[in-house]
Amino acid sequence: MYTVISKNGLTLNTCTTLDEAMQFAKSVSMFVTIKSSDFEVCGVFGVDEVKDPNYDGWISRKQGI
Image (cartoon, rainbow, N blue to C red; front, side, top):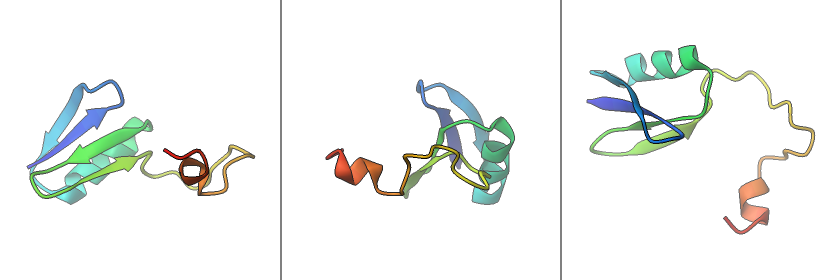
């Protein structure tokens, strides 16, 4: 089971496969966490490019997060 969770902690959907969870995450176009009993992954799925001019892929490391 894979649960798609919003940034606010609300469960948006529960899916039986990771592929279904990824497809759902792409459809909502917002930051989500996909969580299962084995792992969790988070982000905005289906984004083709980052539009923030200050983003270089390592922002969280630079800020010590």
